[in-house]
Image (cartoon, rainbow, N blue to C red; front, top):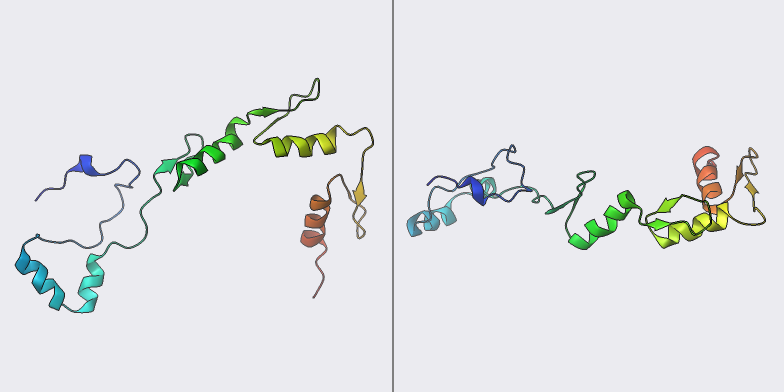
Length: 139
């Protein structure tokens, strides 16, 4: 029986090798397959998971659910624009924009400095990441 290429979903890698084959669907073949050694049965099962069906058109990253793809696409389209006059910055989420407003458009700038080297940061999470990365303690 020939394999119908049109039956392969578009997200399946056609270049990957097929692992294991089944010769026919006759009852006698299926009955004999039950008595074959365990390793033969394992050979016939495909290994690994199938590729996720939703692919990002911008970067080809793949997702199992369409809602995850929609969320990811915002990273590329950046639909939210900064509300400050004259600022052209765009963001994937309104949360990212609020963080930008708090750090870039404040009347009084808040600056935190690294206690080890004096580098300044406008956000506490960036200071914490800097300390973990560059000033690790031996604990």
